[in-house]
Amino acid sequence: MSTSPASEPVIRVRGLVKRYAEHEAVRGIDLEVGRGEIFAFLGPNGAGKTTTVEVLEGFRQASGGTVEVLGRDPWQAPGVWRARLGIVLQESGAEPGLTTRECVALYAGYYPAPRNIDETLALVGLSAQAGERASGLSGGQRRRLDVALALIGDPELIFLDEPTTGFDPAARRAAWEVVDGLRALGKTIFLTTHYMEEAERLADRIAVIAAGRIVAEGTPQTLGGRQLEASQIAFRLPGAVALDQFPERLRERLQHGEDGLLRLPSATVTADLHELSGWALALAVELEALEVSRPTLEDVYLQLTGSEE
Ligand code: ATP
Image (cartoon, rainbow, N blue to C red; front, side):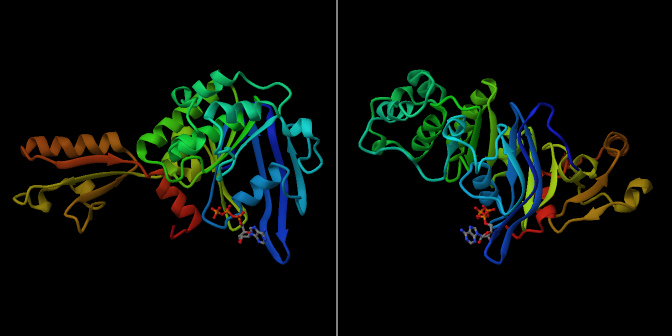
C-alpha cells in the first residue's frame, strides 16, 4: 500500500537507480517524505538503504532518476544546503580529546546559525556530562553526542542511521525520547533501523526496501496490509474438556499448536470472543493463557522481505 506524506515534501525521489559497476543496488525507487515527518526506511542487509541515504545526503551520484532534497538535487547542492541537514552516521564524529561541551561548541562554529549549545546538550540528555571528556562517555552517551553534533547547526532534516544499534533497552528508550524531542521541534527525520519496535514506536510512515526495490510503504499500522490480516485468539483448555463439546462454528477454524495452545484465526474478534467465553462460562471452564494478538510489524516485515534475518 502506498501512502503520501500529509505535508509538503522535503524529500522527493522518482525512479532512483544506483549502479556500482555491473551491480544495480537501487532499482528505480520512489519516495516522498513530508516536512515534520519521521520516516523509517527498513530492509535486510544489502537491500540498498545506505546507498539511497548517501544519494539523499549528496555523498553519491544517482545513476538514474530524479532526487530532490530541500528543493535541490543533493549532488549539485551548495554548502548552504548542506548546513540544513543533520547527519548522524554509524561512526562517531566526536573529538576524543575534548569535553562533550567543547565538541559541540567546535561543531557550532561550522554553521551559519547554530543552536544554543547548552540547550542542545539538554535536548540529548547530556547536560550532566558537559564537562566530561568525550573519550570517557559510554557508548550510548557517545551516540547522543553524535546526535547533538548533528543538531547543533539547527538542521531542518536529520538522517539517523541505525541510531540505537548495540544499545541496551534503557538506552534505546532514552534515545527514543530524544527523537520525540526532535519531533516536537518539527524536524523531519529519515531513520534507518533494523529494530521493528523502534520503527513502530517512532515512525509516522515506513518504506521497506528489498533487493533495491520498495516492496511496501505505509504507516506502522497499515504496512503490507497489516490492518487487514486476521487476529488470533489463543488459549488452553483444561484436559477434562473434550473438543467435541466446543462450539461447532469455531471448531472448524481451530488450530492445535505443539505448545498445547489452541489458536483461532479471527476476522471478527469481538463476536468470536463472545461466543468462546460464553461457552466457557456456561461450562465453568477456565480458558487458560487467553490472548488476542495481531500480526506484529516484524511478522509483516519478514513476509515482505522473505528474509531469514
Ligand atoms: P546494511 O543493512 O547491511 O547496511 P544496506 O541496505 O544499507 O545494507 P547498501 O550498503 O546500500 O545496503 O548495499 C546495497 C548493495 O550495494 C549491496 O549488494 C552492496 O554490496 C553493494 N554496494 C554498496 N556499496 C558499494 C560500493 N561502494 N561498491 C560496490 N558495491 C557496493
